[in-house]
Length: 191
Ligand code: ADP
Image (cartoon, rainbow, N blue to C red; front, side):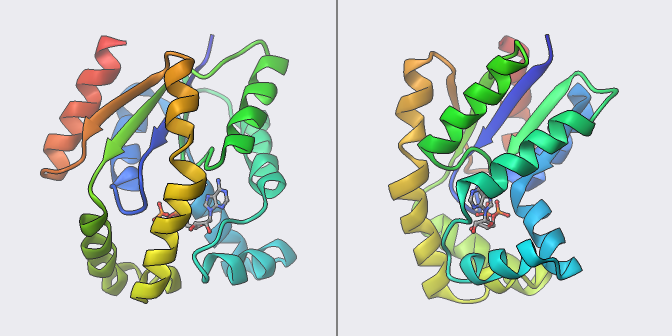
C-alpha cells in the first residue's frame, strides 16, 4: 500500500517548510494545493483568475477545484512510496472526498500529522514571511485574520473527524525548524 500522510495545521504553522524535509526523507510526493493554485495564478489560467480573488480575501477556493487537482496528482505521480498532502483536505467535505477517492483505489489515509501553533504566532510568522515570499494573502493583517477565522470554522473540525478515525497525531510547532522537523520524523518513525 502507498502511504498517504496529511500535514495539518493553521496557516503559518510551517507545513510547507517541513513538508520538503519529510518528503525527501521518506520518498513521498509533496502536494501543496496552495502552491498548485499559485501556479495557476502565475500562468493566468481561468481557474487561476477565479482562485486569485478568493485567496486574496482569505477565503477558500471551491472544494471541487482542489479535489480535482489532488486526484490528477495521484494519477500522474510514479516512483514514490506515497504522498504528503499539504493544505488539503481543508474542509470536512474535502476530507470525505479524499476518503472516497482513496477507497476507489483500495487505499486509505495513513495518518494526519498536525503542527500546532497559537494564533498570535500565526500573525507574526506570516507577517514576517510576507516580505520574503511576496504573497498578496500574507501582506495585510485583516486578510491573515480572515484566514485564521476560516481555519477555525472550516478546517479545525477535521481534527475530530480524524481523531474518530484514530488517525490524528499532533506535534508542538513552537521551536526551531530543526526541532519541529525532528518531532515530525519521530512521529512518523513510531507509526
Ligand atoms: P497557508 O498554509 O499559509 O494558509 P496555503 O499555500 O496552503 O497557505 O494556501 C493559500 C490559500 O490557497 C488558502 O488561504 C486558500 O485560499 C487556498 N487553498 C489552499 N488549499 C486549499 C484547499 N484545500 N481548499 C480550498 N482552498 C485552498
